[in-house]
Length: 397
Image 1 (tube, rainbow, N blue to C red):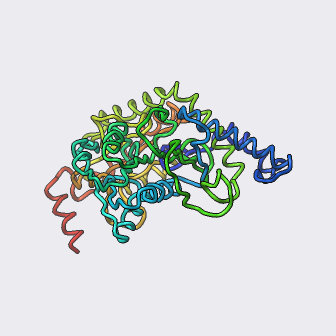
Image 2: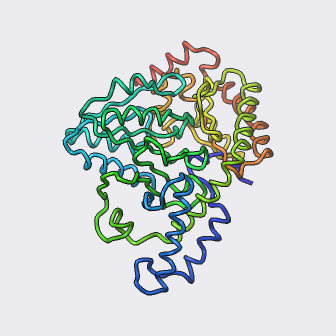
Image 3: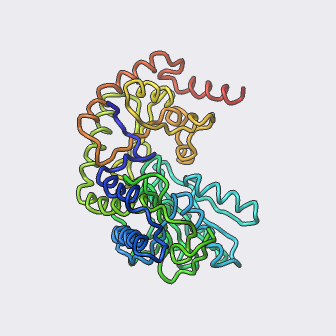
């Protein structure tokens, strides 16, 4: 039986979500933009889903735009913010954003925009004084994540938004990791646009939504048909939108029980720290998502831990980008200033409402032995100076 603790990467589709989707994969196949009643009933179901998503944030349904994913939502928000104030050429973001933000900003730098990348401290937290210092009269956009995907660290988004407003900048938040895990109230928020993705809250992959505050001068990113009130062209992905609406409704209900996830996460953390020497929580000591823990195990490689966990049918994630073929460690953990001994041995466990106590117990049963075995064969075991020298030699080769 697979133990899935990689829910920040993707989540299983909730059975109730699947059940809600199935009619729209078979009998109810009409185009929601059609004039006839067969398509019209599908259009009405999409409207119901829009209301469900809006209710999760306490906003109007007209402020929700359906799209394909978080990356599209982020690209759309950045494009819209810059189009709204074309005379401004400065963007403020953070050094720990998802590539869906960072790579867009790097592309815009080549187009003549200036981008400020805010630093984070050892806990992975932002300094509001640095945010203030980065702002200018020419700042068009401040774009930050709500919570970090690797560490779960939650940023003070409302305070950041208040600073952005002082300088007349648009404030966009990538909340892909936060939606459904913490309450997010947007009705009186400083946030102008907010991105979410269905597959991070037990809806299917390939569907997402963008919240756009009423009154914002929005410019569409995808041009074409009249869908989404002319704000996002393309035939609706009906079954997935229905699934996203149901998932939003379930997430709204689940927030009342989110402490159960937090308690399991905290138990996992405490027990690992007690049973395994020379390890620490990355991002500990500040506000985090209730489902996420990122733990650094000194003197060993995270990929080796993942390999041995996989042999036990336990799914987790490494804090390192090495699994994608790069020798560089995670840009998030690097920005936090963590030493190599922690950087390369960091593992993220991310839980969901489907995670059980028995699954956590199994992880606790195998992790000490895995770490002990890997440290026994590590040439740098318990020797910080040798480890660092070894890493320097490897990078200079």
